[in-house]
Every structure is written in C-alpha cells, then in structure tokens.
Length: 172
Ligand SMILES: [Zn+2]
Image (tube, rainbow, N blue to C red; front, side, top):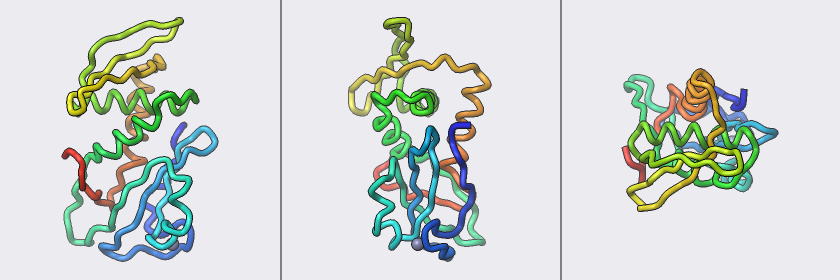
C-alpha cells in the first residue's frame, strides 16, 4: 500500500472544525515516509502553515446535500503531480508517476510515442501535444493487477464523494 487514504474527512485536520455546506477548503497531498497522504484543511489553517510542505493541492468545497454529486477529472492536478515527480527515484514516487502517465494517456492528454531501454531500465516516451513536449517515464514493470489497484487507490485518494473540484484552468 503506497497511498494512505483519509477518505471523506469532513473536518479540518488541524483545528477539527467541521466543514459546512459549500464551504471552500483545501485538500493537499504530502509525500511522507514512502507514501502519499492526503489531508484536508480549512482556509485559515491552510494559510498558516500547511501550504509550505504540500506536494500538490487543490481547492474544493462541500456540495449541498440535495445536489447530485459530480465528478470531475482534475487534469490540472494530475499534470502537476506528474511534473513534480520528474526525476524522483523512490519506488512509490516512480510507481505513481507511471500510473499517472497511463491514466493521462487513457484520458487522451498524453500520447504514447515509444519505448526505450537504458542501462537495463525501461522507459515509455510520451508526447504532450498541448505543450508540444515529450516526457520520459520510468516503467516500473508493474503487473496488470498492480496497475489496476494503484489506479484505484489514486482515484480514491483524489476523489471523494463529498467533494467537488475547482475546475479553473483545467481541461474537463
Ligand atoms: Zn482548521
């Protein structure tokens, strides 16, 4: 297990204040002890210090109870994580980057261009049409079911039935 999922925390992790309907708050990922941990903060705790050590974050809010839950794919967030993981060598970081790459290929953000082998390591080469650039991604040789479960965990980590994303600046 490489991601710790604090699912559906509806209160601030620092001050324990419960979020009210439509309150905006921050969800943030931290790279801690070989795992990515998600934490949710109210705006004031976020501004105090939580921001500093964040790996990636997004602004979100509690939806109204009677409103249907909408799920967005926060492509901006996924790209941000992908780019920040470039050159990172811990297994959990490499695995996440690879799974993010596959996910973004599936969502047609990246195109799979080719493969390359270098000093016994394999890489996939991606093309990102929007910025006309290429990325090389270490292939950790995960098994099909490992990819599946990591993708599922990633989705759970980022998604939450009570949450709606800010979509500013993102595709989708
Ligand atoms: Zn707080």
